[in-house]
Structure formats: structure tokens, C-alpha cells
Image (cartoon, rainbow, N blue to C red; front, side):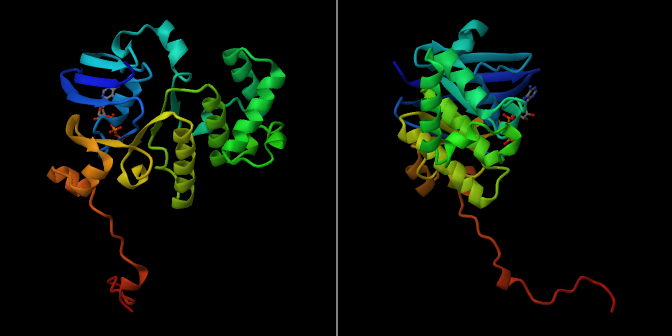
Amino acid sequence: MERLIVKDLTLEIKDRVLLNHLNFELEAHESLGIVGESGSGKTLFSRLLIGRKPQGADIQGELTYRDWDILKLKEKDWQEIRGRKIAYIAQNPHGLFNEMQTIESHGLEVLTSLLKITKDQARDQFVQAMEDFNLENSRDLLKKYPFQLSGGMLQRVMLAMMMELNPYMVIADEPTSALDSWNAENVADLLRICKSKGTQLLVITHDYRLLKGLVDRIVILKKGDLIESGPLEEVLKNPKSEYGKALLAPRTYKRYRDIPEKRDYGFKD
Ligand SMILES: Nc1ncnc2c1ncn2[C@@H]1O[C@H](COP(=O)(O)OP(=O)(O)OP(=O)(O)O)[C@@H](O)[C@H]1O
């Protein structure tokens, strides 16, 4: 069984219910978007999938992924799964790299140790993977240090390295929240590449627009409650709840020319 099954999942900390009887399922070939305003429990839920339970949490119910009873796995099991089978994309990739180590040294270290291949094989694979993620002159990049690359480039390098491990799932938590729209589109492209390689995506966002073309299903959370869930297109077209309607309403921005030319700011001439 390769599905993700969430059955009656409840998480409480000090009598505060932060996830409230969640129920949904996801097939192995499907990708999921989780949407909700700040504090709805999106991050709490997704971190359970990499074995990060918050301290003092009382967790009830079932969380199963590909035959792993996620809530019962030991730290020893997580060493095999976290980053390798279920990967988590960090918002700030600089934090994941040692600034004193070249890109090549990072890549070779990860790929030779985890894939049990030679350094030459690892280098060729890594260069090819970086090219798949549209990094030009990737052989030259090998000699660079992380601080010499932009956050966007480093994110591509990280994903290239990660995807060589062939993870079942990539979790992207607010992957574009700190980015301008051009870079946000870039990240969406990267996630599309991951998906085209057969990896399941779990994308967490405030902004449902990121999900179009990326995920098959959507779950809407509000303060720990599952408000609605279903196929993305269906929910986008016809949200059933008032909360869903408000969250998924097309955003309109005031155009510059709609702003009155002269405003009265109350200053005296
Ligand atoms: N370790 C913790 N101890 C106590 N409360 C926590 C802990 N982690 C999260 N919470 C609370 O759980 C709720 C959900 O948090 P979570 O980070 O999952 O929200 P989110 O939907 O990801 O929000 P955002 O979009 O702002 O990241 C919040 O009210 C938060 O304060």
C-alpha cells in the first residue's frame, strides 16, 4: 500500500487542539496542496511526515505513508527516511550548506555515501542533475562556495542533489512566500521538474495560485480543522465552505491608474 492515509489525526499541546480529527487520503501518484491562513496547522502536519513531533504533543489517530506507521517510527528509522525518501525543501537553502565547503564537495559527500557510487560517477550524476534543473555551466559551479551563489541557484543545487536520491515525496513549505513573483515562478518550475521525475509533491502555501498545475488534490485547514478537501480543479471551481470561498477568491489588486492622482493627506500647504 503506497497511499498517504490520515485518519482521525489529532494533535494537542497543553490542552490546545492544534490538529483536530483530520481525515484524508492521497494516492501514490497524486500530489497535494495544503492551504490555510497563518496558524492553521499546515507546518505542524507536514513536519510530522519527516518525524518532527513538537515537544509535549499528544498525538492520536493514524498517519500512514507507504506502509510506514509514521507516528511510531524510531529516530533510527527516520535517519533512513528523512531527506532520502521524504525530502523537505528549506526556505533558506544557505542554512543547509557549510559555507566553507565547495558545491562539489557537498554533492560528492551526499551522493557517494548514500548511493554507494564512486566519486567520478557521483560527479557526472550531479552535473547532469544540475543541468536538469537548468543550472548552466554546472561543471564550473562545482568549484564555487555556497556564499557565491544566490538563494535561487542554491535552491536548484539542493533540489538537484536531493532528486538524485529519488525521494518518494518532496515537501515544500511556503516555498515562495519570501520571493518576488519572478522567483516564485522559478520555484514553481523546479517543483514541476520534481513532479515530472515521478516524485509526489506536498506543497504548503497561503496562496492557492501556486498550486495550479502542480498538485492534484487540495486540503484546506483553518485553526487545525479540515474545512474541505478534494481534487484541486473541483475545489477551485466550486468551494463548498464559506472559508474556502474567501480563501480561493481571485485576488484583485488596485491598478496604479485607479489610484486618484491627488490625495488629501491632511497636510496644510
Ligand atoms: N511547538 C509548538 N508548541 C506549541 N504550539 C505550537 C507549536 N508549533 C506550532 N504551534 C501552534 O500551532 C498552530 C499551528 O501552527 P503552524 O506553524 O502549523 O501553522 P501554519 O498553518 O503553518 O502557519 P504559517 O502559515 O504562519 O506558517 C499555531 O497556533 C502555532 O502557534
